[in-house]
Length: 210
Image (cartoon, rainbow, N blue to C red; front, side, top):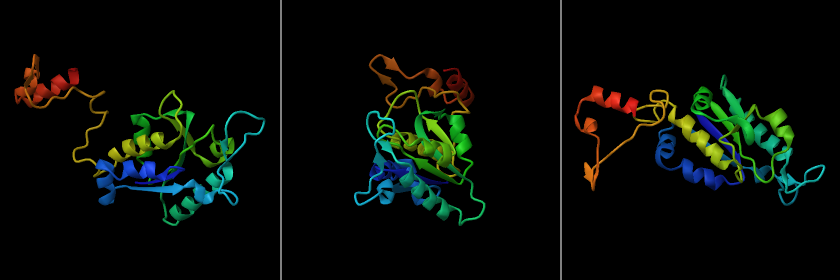
């Protein structure tokens, strides 16, 4: 699985993607996370990536041309490899909710091109003509698309074979069960006896009930 992240904050993506499970997965070449600084395709002398909205309104809007050029560059590279399945995703507040089901669907692709918006929005032509779909991680407004992109990278990577030592997904157990570690007793709070029994069938049953 290869992730291509178009962003104005590449270091934000890189710091997270190069640490912990994702970092190890990259070193073992199970996944690849590559960032593309959108300003490289910025317009004019000052490499502008945004402009005032037509019709007026607050703030600045990310322009279509830099995003088009960045996506085209990535696609030209990806399509040199035959039969690679690619998906272009724009993160926005109106997008489809990103869930574990969506992560499973996206995990079937070979390359995901993730567009991180900022400012007051992205030129509508990006959503209509460049992105294959729009995704959201919740009904709230964030400053940019970097956190949604990282959420998608993390969730999809965990479904990639070889990334996790033992692959247990939310499909196997609805939600997450309570977990405990040492000490067995902390003040008046004790670990449930079932977990101390060593009886694996009873432990599995307890976890599913809880």
